[in-house]
Image 1 (cartoon, rainbow over the protein chains, first blue to last red):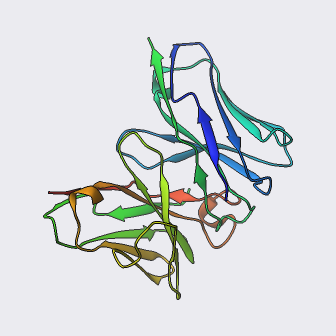
Image 2: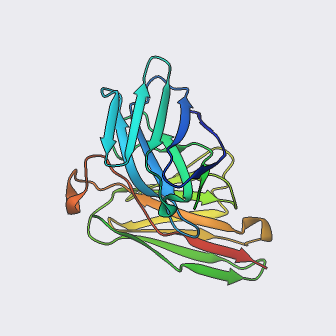
Amino acid sequence: GENVEQHPSTLSVQEGDSAVIKCTYSDSASNYFPWYKQELGKGPQLIIDIRSNVGEKKDQRIAVTLNKTAKHFSLHITETQPEDSAVYFCAATPSYSSASKIIFGSGTRLSIRP
Amino acid sequence: GAVVSQHPSWVICKSGTSVKIECRSLDFQATTMFWYRQFPKQSLMLMATSNEGSKATYEQGVEKDKFLINHASLTLSTLTVTSAHPEDSSFYICSAPPDLTGASGSDVDEQFFGPGTRLTVL
């Protein structure tokens, strides 16, 4: 089955700087990679996703890159703001079908220093 | 976007009692729903896949007789924690992918997560 590893587990950056979170996956059949933001006591919210036929995707301050050959994908947040502080999870799913299981990484606790 | 609700948002119960948690898709239909468990400072671990009209599929290591799942309709799945013990205390989260791509304004293939239910067993 799929295994998703995520690094770092904690990340502290100065407000305005960039943050990068990296993930690797094991199942070459995985082709959909969502990223979630979870605030304390709440469910995860999708912030960006990428499919295996795309190498990079950007949405304002957030970007995701995918290296399918190396089975690596990364989240980049630029111009970080205090409201970016949260736990971020990468994930992988082996199918375009939304009815497939989502396998989560271990999470990264991002703190933005004022 | 599509909304998934959970009820209750938190519950405290005595050891040995059973607790039912509801997961509802408010504005879309979902034949399949997923139940996750999240311990403090840990990731979401998939417990089971709930299927409307058929039995749930449990992940390895999850006791099906302890965590009863009923997918009663295309908008409702329930998780019952039977004979709860303190080690069952956790944050339980459901997710529901819409049956129809683009339903309720959803992007293709997005799964929507509920707000979670905090279970504390004394």
